[in-house]
Length: 359
Image (cartoon, rainbow, N blue to C red; front, side, top):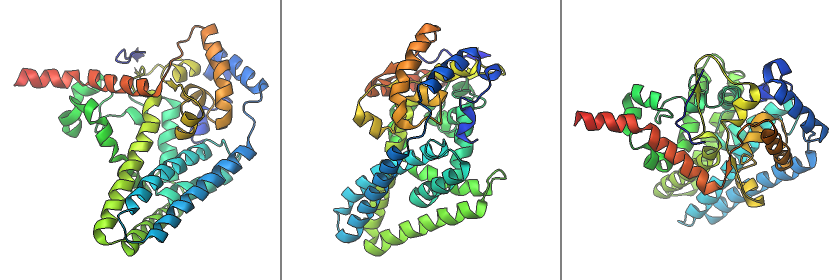
């Protein structure tokens, strides 16, 4: 096993749940799991999720209601910005559903997950589940975590040295380009979702595809029937770009700039999750805007834990990590972005150095 020093220091995603046996998770995690269970922090919160899901649905409906009420006007760009925020909140709800935080059973989780994901915002529940499951099992592992696979960006100096194509073209300056590139993330989610329909691992292909294309058809029909072509294109651009930025800003603080692993060996379950995750400090507003993902360490240790329990779990997990001498990283939101951008700049050094040598 090699641990990158570039950083400064779920079935589905639920595959990393606390039911992992002590032999796999390690005795450290088993003891922590008992404390969390005894504190009742894995119990479901139906009241909370009834309010949360109901509120998100109501606000999403209100946004589309305002869209149809306003008609063909440039004020629709304000509606586009609001709906970008609501699409992000819908994505966060789909995330909780996929982790079975809302329902214990798989079937209702899948039904509601596809309604929120495929139909609600045009993001394939099946595609995201496949990707996110692998991420939770091996966070920040260069060979196993799809979230740190080199694509447009590189996440380690080794990836930078071996990069080619677009990653090599922008890798040397990827830090200042990171937030501008997030404007494309909304479009990327839709394209990746459609492309995944052809993947052999995709289950319920017909249902997934039907809901996705129903969303796309309804979305584009609404835009081009209510708005003039120019305004429709502007609405689409503002809406999807801001959706991508919001979603990216929600997930970027979680692991970017934290230690990465490579090779065949891995740390035990507790250390694999804690060492690669970063918590973000903040109050109720931060909790709402980040959907509870600001408690990334606790979420990765206990993916099925309902969001409102994560704050209480944090005190137990942080104290336990201090007890067993495991680093527990927590910072403010702005600092989390600074650390992520500093990491992106640092790992791009081999590309900058090679270009300088060639010039």
